[in-house]
Structure formats: structure tokens, C-alpha cells
Length: 500
Image (cartoon, rainbow, N blue to C red; front, side, top):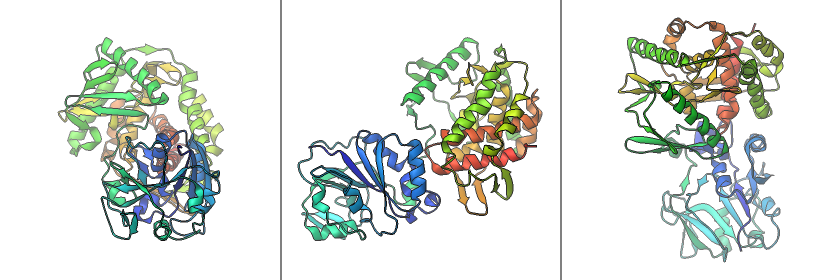
């Protein structure tokens, strides 16, 4: 037989993960661009999940309601203690004589792990990390082991085998008394992320969950891995083809479009350098000069439907999706970093009026996402534009040039790139929201930036668009609950500066 059900033990405060679980349960801590529990969802998309929660269970429920696309039920184990908590209630939701998996939420299984026909009970043993218990010679022993450690994965032929599991206590210790025999599954290349130290070892992902980068010695291949990624890839390729045709060379050399393979630039992203004040001025001059050259590649008629879509409709579509997920989103005023900020949900008409009065003469050729994360300095000084967005609202290639300037401001003033790498802390209390983002170190370029762009759009309008970009990030950064909330609060914080 095959197992159809998966019980995920997602309870516990996750105290060993420290600040990562201040606002969310450990099952939602992001690992490689996905919340931990979503790695299970992607590996077993056709299974039925029974998820045991207690700490921050309301966050877990609301998050899954918005973003999970699998069959699941949630068991509320509040008031119960230990890894046994909730298991008794969970197995009651499984039909008789059905095999099922029981797994801890902080395990990320290897891609090549395959479990087919179930002929007995199974236990997963560690091969790459140390566990407090070991399983050898059909015995559980409280002895640390890296090769035969009890990793937190079990498969049972049917629920009657553990039907007398207590409502509280340590599950493995209870199993020790049961004398159940298990066949062993070696969990090679499986990782446990229950400790902050293990999370810190991860290399920060530079691409979104819908993309994959293959880095070769002299080139990089970029691929979309789901419908969203593949759709964006079509526009990105179109953008590169068009700028090459128009003679714009401030991009990497493109070697092929199927797949998209490009030159690996000998340099780092702008925010990764520690420049002096004068060096930053020189780099900023080059970046803005490149963007002005890009904007002058072509012009198009203004499409006000695209303006409304990019700045209002899309923003509220995304915000409405997470309205019930973000704390205090039902309050008209939210105090953020000591500032009383008006909540955009109560001021939609005011925002719509601001953009109904927004007027420009033409659309320009656009990059659409020119943050420091998408500008690489060849040899440390020559800016190259990468990862274009390729559209604006309903318009391909062309759009409001102020959007590009606001995206650049997003890195200079907003420190978006550090936020994107999760280098921020979010504290949610009843009195105040505090968000502290690590600095790119470019805030001192703010006034010089406005001086250089000489935009036909006012400083206030660029700041308004900057706030809107933060608010739109809420569901684009869906893989991390703290990022969703942080983007929302940051957007309100900046919006308050320009709301009249």
C-alpha cells in the first residue's frame, strides 16, 4: 500500500530558533525561499496533510488559508505539551487501516528521497545531523547519534499501532516503551532546521521561489520553475532581445534565450560594496546615466489604465489578500517606529484621488525593477542592469519612468536589498510596531539622487510611488510571514510622509 496522509508536528514555540519565531511558528520559517512546511507540500502535493499547531496557531491558520494549495486540516493542540501533543487528535482524522507518515515540521527532506510501497512501519534516521535519540538493533536509546539518530520521520501501517499515544509527553520516549519494530529509512541529504545556527549556515537566496539560477563557471542560466516564473521569463527574454536590438549594452552578454543564458559578470551587486562617499557619488552618476540612456531608447503614449493598474489596482489586490494575516490591519491608525501612520485600507479613496491627478506626457522604455539587487558592478565600477521586469501595468516594455526612479530610491532610502535578504527585525507589540532594516549604506545619497535624476516628476510623487512599491511587496514576498508584515508596515511608514 501507499501512504495517503501526512501528520506534521508543527507545535512548540521553536525557542531554539530565537528571533525567527517571535512572530510566527517555526513551520513558517523560510528555508531556501519557502516556508519549511511548504517543502513538504511541494514534495507531496497529492497527499492529505493533518497539521498540528499550538504556538501562533492563528498565524499558521491565516497563512495557510492564503497561500497553501494542498488538502489540509489543522489540529489545535494548545494546552498539550511535548511532541506527543495533538497526535491522538490527528490520527482520529485518518480512516482505519490507512498508512500515514508522521513528521516534524523542521525536517526538509532531500529531493531524491523516495518512499513507495508501505510493507511495514518505518523510521527515518539521520545521516547529516546529530539527533538526541538513536535507533539501533530495534531499540531506542537516549544517546546522541549522527548516523542512526531519530530524525523525526515515521511511517505507520495504520493508526491502531499508536492509538494509545498520550496527549502530552515526548513521542520518542513513549515509542521506546512500545517495542514497535521499524524498518530504517536513511535520510541522506535531509536537513533539520530547528536551530538558529543551522538557519544561519544557509546562503541567502537571491531569486524568488518561482525562479531557479544555475551558476556555471562563466555564465548563469535563469529558468522559471512554476507558472508565475515562466510567465515572467517570457517578458524578461523579450526585454533583453529588444534592448540588444536597440544597441543598449549596459547589460550582460546574452549567449542564448532558450534557455536564458548570460554572461557571469565579474563583480557584485551595488549594495555589497563598501564605498566611500565620493565613490558612491561616482557609481550613482553612472547608474542614473545608464537608466536615462535606457529611458531614451523609445517613447510611447501614456496608458492611464496601466498607471491605475500598477499603482492602485495591483496594490490593493495584493493587500486584500493579506488583510486578515497582518496584525492590526483592521486598525485605522498603526504606530510604526514611533510614528502614527494611517492605514491604507481606510484611505483607498484618498490614494485613488492622488493618482487620478497624476499626469505625465509620455511613457519611456523601462527596466521596471532597477534596485541595487538588479545592478551588478562589472570590475567593481561598471554598472550592468539585470533581471528586468519588462512591463508596466498592461503595457509591455514601456511605462512611467518615475517607477524606475522610485525602484532605485527603494534601495537608496528604503534599504530594500537588505530587507530582501531577511536582514531585518520585526517586533509586533500592542503599543508599537518596530521594524529595523540593515542599511545598504546609501542613505547619504538621497539628495544627490534627486539632483541627478532631474525628473519631470516631483520628489513627492517618487516618494509616493516608493511607498506603493513597499505595499505591493506584501504578497510578492509571500515566502516569509515577517516580510509580508514588514513590507506592509514599511509602506505605511513611508506613505505617512506624503499623505496630506
